[in-house]
Image (cartoon, rainbow over all chains, first blue to last red):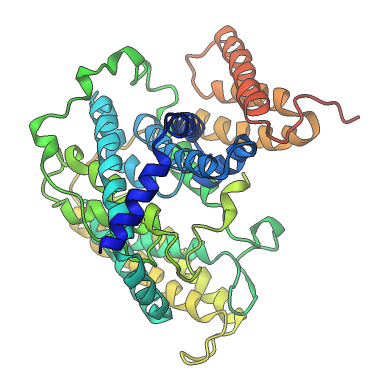
Length: 321
Length: 150
């Protein structure tokens, strides 16, 4: 245990210098700005901003890259909340609860809570990673196909419980999602499935294209010509509008997030489901954003933990648009 | 209207499941111990077929009588927005970023009936300038700003 603190202290002493922190700030700012653009995911952001770090000292460069990473992850949530345009699959959940808040004129609160939640979640995630990395690694090695599959099924069924309409519909939603995931080359046999002979589909349906089409385009089609005034005006989001009300504070996130196999998306979907009783449809928007963000941060910290590349999220799909 | 909508939605899910079942038979099923590439799609197809029929029958019956405002489909938007995307995809490589963005914004602004010619043009010009600044000059993406292939 002491070893962990020694290492952490060493890291902090190395990282805390005005220069390093300055570059970190620079990285976070840039990352947030680029991450704001819908459809530009974390990986794409890092790939584009990587050249900025080439001339830096390796340690400073790493700190700046980490800043870009977190900035991009955070920036994506802003577009989700204000515009209902998820930049990545993982921020799609933020759309579900953040955007309704914007519609109620409370986008500022959503933004504020996302910020706080992702900060707290990051810290918890880092602490968990530092404390449990070694034991987790041994567990991760033992995670076989059965465990992976069970975890996925758990995640999908849990996600389908989130919806307030009807379990049948949301289960069908999950099944269709998995069916879309099958498009492309089969990993084990190499058979090309459900591509209609289109070569662009051999690597599967691009996640960004799918998310933008379903969340973004549909919303645009629905609103074109109907929405006359802008929902979000910059001056409406003041410092005061960011203060959450008392009800917004209720309800914690969920601590289950460092499972080494679960991709960020899964953990993000786990969080709201845990604290959303389907019986509170009106205020349920309140506490939501905090949950997925905070538990989402933890896996984004935890994904360097060794695991098998069974999930598709980290394939560099997001590079192509 | 909800009933009709649920019937259509359930029917679509069931049809998709049916397609997956038929298609997976062509890929080969195998057995649970030795799966071929059609095994998993077959299972999913059966699930989707069942769920789709369930939505069509049970849900529709339960909700029968409940009325819900169904918004009229905005055909203008349904046609114009995909057209804008197609225009972008078609022009970005041969003609470059500036014409592609300009066309995309111009076409998609026609989705809104209240949008006149002039604001659409102004908007298109500004978005083009900004996206060129951000993507080409700021992020140095590998796209042509403008070119003429002929």
